[in-house]
Length: 59
Image (tube, rainbow, N blue to C red; front, side, top):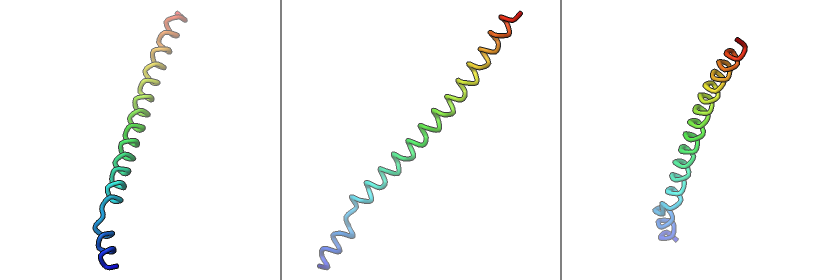
């Protein structure tokens, strides 16, 4: 029984899986944040272009 407890306490497979899950989660959050930032920038740029074109059409 003591040998089984020692074997269980030295097994790091679960810890490795948790580490990979945390790394994957951080990467996902980074990608989502970056995509959101780029999306907002593109939206603002296209809005400015549209406003400029509209202003020139009204002249």
